[in-house]
Image 1 (cartoon, helix red, strand yellow):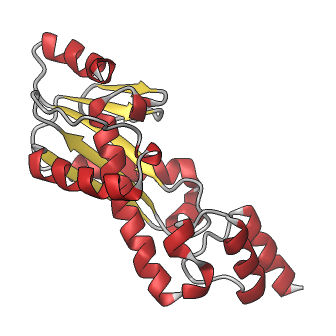
Image 2 (cartoon, rainbow, N blue to C red; image 1 turned 180 degrees about the vertical axis):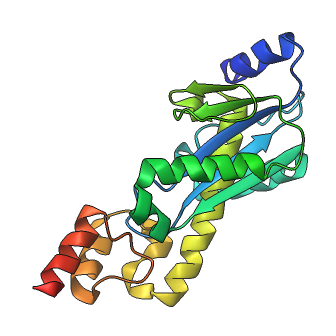
Image 3 (cartoon, helix red, strand yellow; image 1 turned 60 degrees about the vertical axis):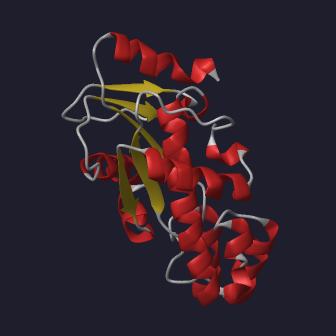
Length: 205
């Protein structure tokens, strides 16, 4: 657990108090938006078991989501939809969502810790590869982003139950790919993604 505070502690020692962790969820799915969260935690924040949201059970993520929401000094969300992803590509869309999350953070931010991506922001930032398992702030952001996006996919599942979005969250599982071939694409699918574009092509022919 102590190593999760390494980056934050180095900044605290330099007199920096307000550190935002930024992470995204949704680069790989074939459907829906990419969602980013920016989270500023209090210095004394401790949450045993907090790590990369993908390694947590859904039940634990939901529990941690509530604890983080209750204790964070500030949380910002950035959402970029599938149409924009198709326009600019997923990396650019991710950067836009991260920047939006940063701008939506309602408290002061002096330094930003970002999972893997490099951003041009008004404040200094550090890009950390696999940051969601190396920084408490980024791990918290990954939980907020994941739960936010999963809830959106659960809503989409009500509209299109045949694709199994509640289970696969839009990722290209066997069930999702079979449904794509059977029912075609929805308005929420990312048209530039391989499995989706090949269904469009097949239907056009």
